[in-house]
Image (cartoon, rainbow, N blue to C red; front, side, top):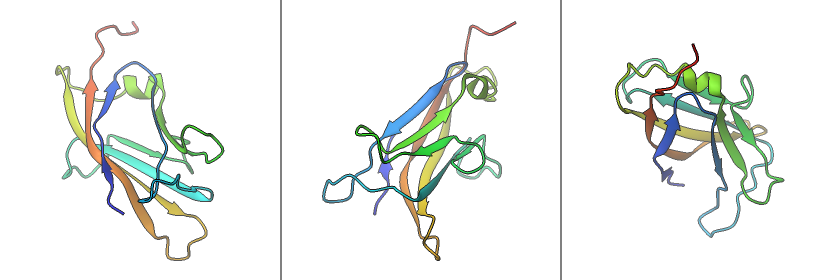
Amino acid sequence: MKPSKHTLHIYQGTSWQLRVRFKDPDGNSMDLSGYSGEMQIRRSIHETDPVVSLDNDSNGGIIVDDQNAEFNLIARLTRAQTEDLPTHNTEIEDWVYDLRIWQNTDPDHTTIRLMQGRVFVYPAVTRDE
């Protein structure tokens, strides 16, 4: 399955959520019951360390929820997490990300990349003192 390409926009100092409903090639909603996921954001594809690393096991930044009628996966950052993004006070930061899932019961841990693309991070002007 080819990953979808989407540009994400994150505003420093605010809560951020990506809510999506993934569908199979026939347009049917994917059943993500029993899946885990992870998403990483890096300044560039060549960076060694991610700026952001989200998953549903260690930090709860990914929620796989097949019970919701509108979406079956949420990626989220708290206000505190977006405040900590290293933006170097430039007007807009242009980074990259991808999001992948795997079925927990699959012994081969077959992984599917669902999304990828660019992330625009907008530094905050108003800051806590």
